[in-house]
Length: 207
Image 1 (cartoon, rainbow, N blue to C red):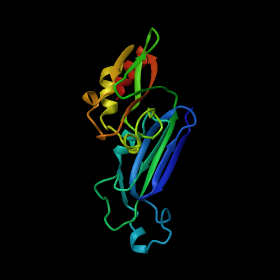
Image 2 (cartoon, helix red, strand yellow):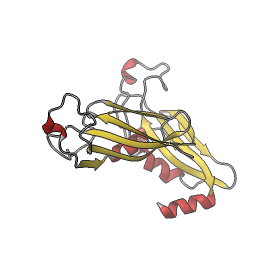
Image 3 (cartoon, one colour):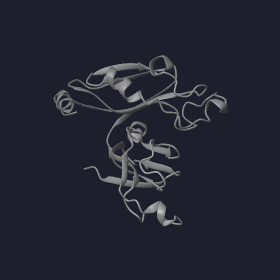
Image 4 (cartoon, rainbow, N blue to C red):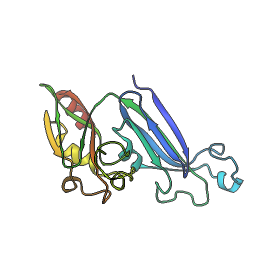
């Protein structure tokens, strides 16, 4: 049973999502204001009175799904502005789901395999860099300093090659994913699980 957790972050601050076990699966992510109490300290009434302001934020799904931990700088994260002049906040609800993971450095190949009778289901993927320590050996600091590097087509690219197969391989390179941050040494992280072929067919039909 997966307990859900809701994180509220005032606009301009960093939103942190994390799982002790498993990986993040975002259930909902919104930006706006639906309460006059939240993120209201020190704000004039005119900035907090509109409580009918809310839009979905798909970029949070794309950046955080499948990761064990995710830190998002919310400054300028969501466009357009759903209610100009109102001070807004981000509300993200997520659960932690069991999954295995694969991590390879740039120019290496990630190979995923599942036991007989099961197939790959991709929960999330990112070709980029989310911290300064992974795949850092022998690299100058300038290639490691950008830690908010996300290739937003990572999930769809990996899923198109691996979803529903018993095994697959994918090269961590700009030629496959394009280059999300020029000059940064990147890595490919994939979160996946092995599911029965029958479950995979049902899942695809329900998507």
